[in-house]
Length: 143
Length: 148
Image (tube, rainbow over all chains, first blue to last red):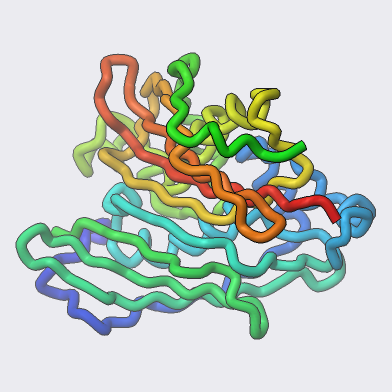
């Protein structure tokens, strides 16, 4: 069955999850602003963002956080198995009008508890040379 | 106005219930590119043992921010929202947020610190159903930038 949840016996510490490149456009930010009710203008209004000292429009940290975890949800096979997820927002993702931004997400298993079948996954999200999420860690319950 | 460090430990009254709807779960999942069918397909969600479609892992921010608003809008807290930057976020899911849930949140201010010219406020929102079943613990660190 294609929706099967990953088994703990198929996971080991050091295992890398399939990485993903996330393209962020202004449209992505407006869509997230609507869905999340985060109406801060720095996420869609270039003139306003620059007036408060930002280089350009920046992505919502929660957008990057919410998008990055798909790497883990898809790997484990059920989003409901993500029982813990936390991160620091280290560097804002600047999203220029013309080209948008690309965030690369990688993840690796850093711990596995065979008893509880809980795996700890550390995520890295980078935009160019900037680390955009810091200490991003998720815990999933495997089958 | 300075951020009130005396707010550490303060707990606010429970929020009004947030009704978790299927359409909002879907809208949020689409906005973050969460393609797991469990967010949109009730039959699939039930086959996996859930009562109905479930929210993606960061959906709880919608309810946590409703909790945080109590602090931000509290005039005694001294928080200028235009200077707030999201520093850190964490969720512990006791079980997935599910369509049909009525969720109330209880906000506690875990710490208020002055760091350099900035203030750092860490809040914890305990989200539970109307019946008291724990659903999610959401912890947010807000950085309030100091004046120039």
